[in-house]
Length: 369
Image (cartoon, rainbow, N blue to C red; front, side):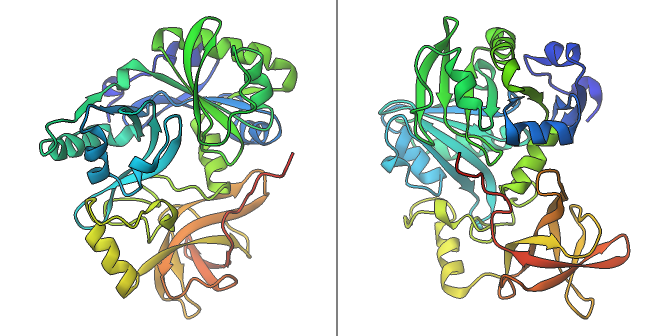
């Protein structure tokens, strides 16, 4: 996309003033790094980092038919979601492929906020509004411009946030929300994230985003908090074996194939449910695995996965050298019947077959602290 057509987040000038390297991402001009991806990655694992993820989209579902519409759209049990709770889910197409994955925040008895991926906002909105025509009692609004979204992640995140909010965030369970204030600024705080660490996502007014992020960095300076970019966010989520749309998920890949069965309900009334049921009965053709390199080389997205006689049998969806684990890792699709832990594969790295082994998910699990 030409640079002049890229959207800019509310904190764009703040990022530039901080020396961030700005790149095109999902139609937006976003910070990929400040001081360096490895340092930011390790900072999140040991202390805390704050990310600007305001490029994400937000749709608000409400009205007497809002939950009925969502039940048609998403694979999870949305009506079982308690007020104040958060749920991971996804929209499917009629072929069982993934239109997008989404986080759902139940704000009150009739209102759910859905956060969608930046690159999919227009596509998702077309999908949602098309289905909404059959639900006249539902109200759905694209409220993406109403929010700036910050992610405060890491083992010291709760302590840092606790110094600026008007109530204690440390006692908030995982995947819950609470309305708090930072310096008098209303903030919707959610215990969620995308790094494998405990942390929070903060929904705030775009006009107050710079004030909030500056305050968080100021009170966390003694703990070593860092501003972190999308580069570290990607390596962190890879270490935590978290799917990224456009890599592990797309319109030709089902949540079952991507090992996201946990969010798929037994309901039969959502779009694509019949296809997923057939997949359960007949078996899958491909399945996501975690690979750890045995031989030297970094597996990159799109690299071919080979069997022992050199035939291509799959592809890498995400891969990198893992800064915390200090090894090269990847997620990849391979034949569903050939996913046993310990199974050997080879990755075609620039024409050389380098050995890898299937390992348990996730690569990284945060220690008890």
